[in-house]
Length: 273
Image 1 (cartoon, rainbow, N blue to C red):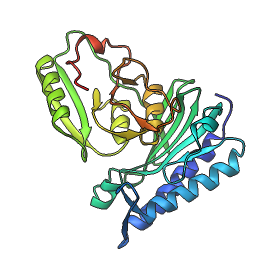
Image 2 (tube, helix red, strand yellow; image 1 turned 90 degrees about the vertical axis):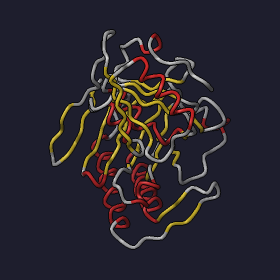
Image 3 (cartoon, rainbow, N blue to C red; image 1 turned 30 degrees about the vertical axis):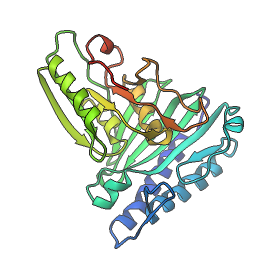
């Protein structure tokens, strides 16, 4: 990864988080976008801060945001790298005021998330990952603490699964039942937004199966953090989940794992598409 102004990017995440909290602590209004997903002034304020800031500090790198219209694939497929941002992931968590929403800024190079910053405004934290450097950190209270995903073993009986707080379904329940048959001590932690991948990166859980729709901007920044911490995100084709590789910006079903070195495919239940 060519040198980018990481301090400036982190500062943008802090600023976006502050703008989000101003709305969060007010009597805010909720609108619905064309796809019926919720939108608040916090989404828009965060978007403006990040997009304007990135355009200023890295004017030569294009930007895709959830709150803007992406260019056609013919154009963006030619980009060697670009910023992919979700100004506020977990809007439902924001509306429900449980604090589990995030600010997400990712740098994509060659279809891979290579650098990411995930802000958790209510917790006063940033998760930062630089994949090439193998450096993943949690920044809070002026301190930077290295983080890493915890290791699995072939004989392991316990498994901590993180699952969506707002999105589930019968297929996911069946899949988790299959995990429980292999790992007798399977426990489940509901978490909202891209924070699920950061929980893996911080060594607090082992596996996140996502059987349902997400967009590339939902997970890219946290994917970089997780990769830098020794984990990975795979499609069920067993390949690392790519970015900007097709016309649609929707992800397939995927698995996020804390330990990329473990032979997950030998122990996971059968996948039903």
